[in-house]
Image (cartoon, rainbow, N blue to C red; front, top):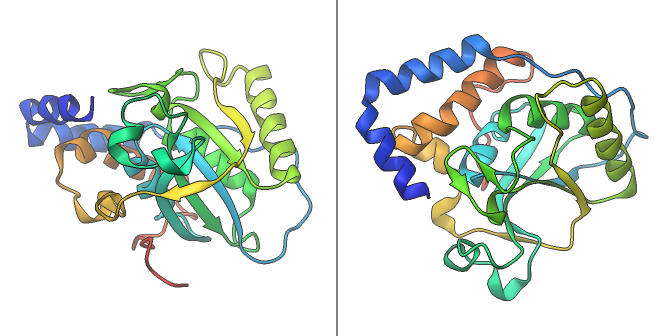
Length: 229
């Protein structure tokens, strides 16, 4: 599906694609923040987020203040199937995912989820995002502790009750079984390939929306996955 999306983007032309990025920034808006909070955590924390192609998810969170590292990878399946070709079959249980390591003294878990639901994905879509279809592109929050699980589930109920989106949120919340980093060529793909048509059409609009909707959280220089804090 990703190859087809690249071909379609090439056919549209650079001018139209950049206009799409500008339109995304103009239309950007944040969903309401979580009504609940969670106990203060000490030290760096992690959560794994799935919302379509991991290039865009990683690219957004690399630009978020308080995120120390965002690593593209796979979650939901087993180690022996955690490679791109196998995951792309849609039969492994894995979702393309991003392990987000954040400093809770700089950004809360709830605010990370607010950004996730605001600019990263359409949470009402089932087993797809944009041009990409399959269970590997599902929307899921893989939590690493009970407090994260409680807040994430409460937040989804809150957004559904407020009818923030046109449909019911399909995002699942599950305890993280394991996370497996993706191949090196997938890491930091948005930052290192900003002119790649798929990135321009599907993912740069998300970064533009982040900057517009969350200017105080936006970091101009991305924190790359291999960068030490």
